[in-house]
Amino acid sequence: EPEVTQTPSHQVTQMGQEVILRCVPISNHLYFYWYRQILGQKVEFLVSFYNNEISEKSEIFDDQFSVERPDGSNFTLKIRSTKLEDSAMYFCASIPGQGASQPQHFGDGTRLSIL
Amino acid sequence: RKEVEQDPGPFNVPEGATVAFNCTYSNSASQSFFWYRQDCRKEPKLLMSVYSSGNEDGRFTAQLNRASQYISLLIRDSKLSDSATYLCAVIQGSARQLTFGSGTQLTVLP
Image 1 (spheres, one colour):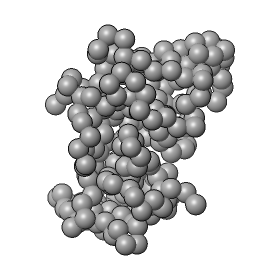
Image 2: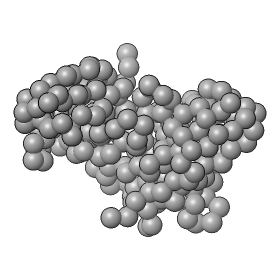
Image 3: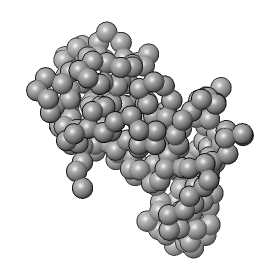
Image 4: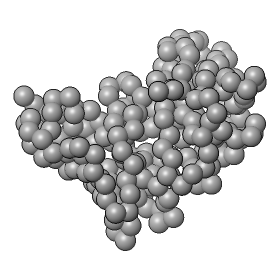
């Protein structure tokens, strides 16, 4: 069964550095999402992406965050200047289209640790 | 009021027990509903979608009550391998993003 893949599995970065998290969504899917989960807290929506642009974003997704799909396969999340509170698991998800009941399937996540 | 609320537990039950989790959501315009299972430090994995008429998948039964805005998950004959955190998720918003509850922790004891 096709799956969403994410790299790296674990990223350790100094505070203030830029970090790029990568995702390869399921082939032929059209809608892409990033979520994050701070340790011990719930999974939170960050941003959705469709047709090469952001379709919706949460309050968490401020100017320090950006997303792009540079080559038609990778879907990346960039954090420009990381803060300690960015430490979390980051999950990517995708769906084929906007069918009413399509569940999202998640990649196995990137653990981001900010020192 | 939180958008999606769950009892955090923990629920500690013996093998073979039946256990039920509830989840309430605040947005009456919510469109679709799911239960996910999450093991420690892993990604959420889809357990089942929840349909208006209720649906069953083996030992798992999900129900939706739109009038009262809650969904439920029933696990029968629980196994040790059912130990996990169960996340309720609701689709809201034009981009169909998921809003998750905080999860209910289940431990099945031998």
